[in-house]
Amino acid sequence: MSDARHDGRAPNEMRSLSITAGFVRSATGSALIEAGGTRVICTASAVEDVPRWLVGKGRGWVTAEYGMLPASTGERKQRDVSRGRPDGRTVEIQRLIGRSIRGVVDFEALGERTVYIDCDVLEADGGTRCAAITGGFVALKLALDRLVEEGKLAKVPLTGSVAAVSCGMVGGRPLLDLDYVEDSSAEVDANVVMTGDGGLVEVQATAERTPLSRASLDELLALAAGGIEVLRAAQVAAAGSLPS
Image (tube, rainbow, N blue to C red):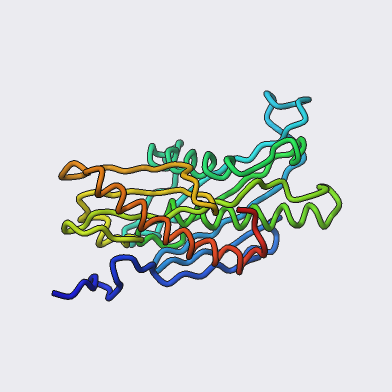
């Protein structure tokens, strides 16, 4: 029996991937990330201000917002503004994006300014939160590069790089970078956030049908580590040299 997946990929193969830097010219930093059929615009906007609880402390802040365009899933999704509040999934994802990226920022070196990372999903075919983290980091790096060029920062205040990839058990097989078809039928679905040197930032794993064994978790983490290497190479191509 062939090991090929429904789209012809090997179990450890990523979807086609591209990151276009500077996609939104009016933003301090921006990137369009395309992973298979998933497309996310990520922008980073620097503001010379911080939340009230940070005023006078000599530290900056990075926060994230996430949203899906109404037609991003094929069936129209109501805008959050129409409902009057974001749904629980949106809040959970934007908190994940913020936590993941803040883990590699030197806030003292950033100074008293805030960088807002906005991730807007154009098309969703699985892995949108992972694409948002990976592209959001590129947008942040480009924004910080610009602040250095403008003389507002002495150096890029990053202590490392970060990217994220999905993986899961589908039909009893560990697979990397799930698309929607695979994600919707997975027995186990995981999102893995890692630094460029292999450190785990966050692992979200849910067993939908059968419990996940320790051995299977190790298999998924090994798959994810290979995927992160591919993502980091694409980040470097888009944003230049990165810290680990």
